[in-house]
Image (cartoon, rainbow, N blue to C red; front, side):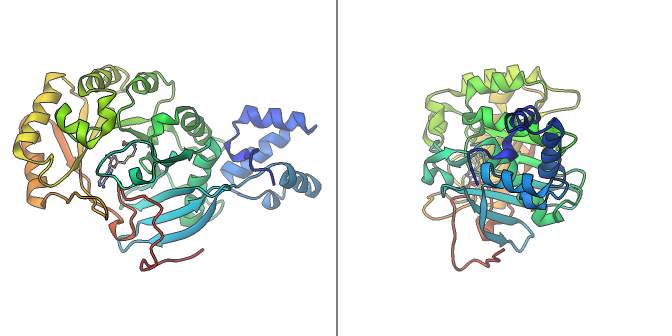
Length: 361
Ligand code: SAH
């Protein structure tokens, strides 16, 4: 096996080139693409429409799968967390979140994360490395196969969010390549319209993202209504201030499609950024930029050792939301999911805790 030729991350044209290079006809590339992405087979052996000798050859010179699932945790609310390792032993975490009318897969774009958001556990890992396009796509295939069975049709309405470990906009090329591969109608067929990418605010990439022809939805993690506080909570703010971030957001608004909105995420930290005054400041900030096609997702903080924050009371969460709404800003509260298995936002830190209910594959 050669992990550097991870065919799961090859676009159709790259696969065609690969087939040509090894002296195989073009249609082999198509068969491999369909095997990996439509039938969701993560081993060449199973692609029985390919001649046996060719499958053996592929096995030697390339790889269909480079991730291995080390543990799989199931929350009492049905959320599943997959702790995987890359071939060179870096952690990758992916979360499956079922809801009544649609399922969501939350995937990672990096192993660890270089941003030092003070309230996030992933930050404690630091950046380990960028994930390849193949590693991003494979996460989704592994989860789909676990939940729906190998080769079964992906239920319509499965959404993807790039909200796992890492900062997607610091791995822009691999992320956009993975998104393109997943959108293919002869493959997974998960269109960008069902994908949301969340950024802590890498401003130049917001402009670039806005120009993508097949652009997913955007979420921006704001979490503070002024620079003084945001500098402390999210050090990326020292590089790009709120003003620059909101200018980019304003520009991004122009790229929205009919009926589409974009999101600001706001992690509510008890006593830190959740007072009535903060809510009023936030509303007037957004109103001053005339950001009309935006909604705010309020995320109650998911606490975990050694983070020093605690969530706001439910009364205050509701109250914060009401203040925003009274000033014309739409706000929603994100219910925490999978907290008991360290699967919730900001809890992905490759935790393999023995006292969790662990179901090994
Ligand atoms: N780096 C990107 C992608 C991560 S998305 C970003 O920052 O947007 C993860 C979301 O969870 C972000 O909105 C982040 O602010 C939020 N988050 C991080 N730690 C959290 C925690 N402990 N509790 C609740 N939300 C948290």
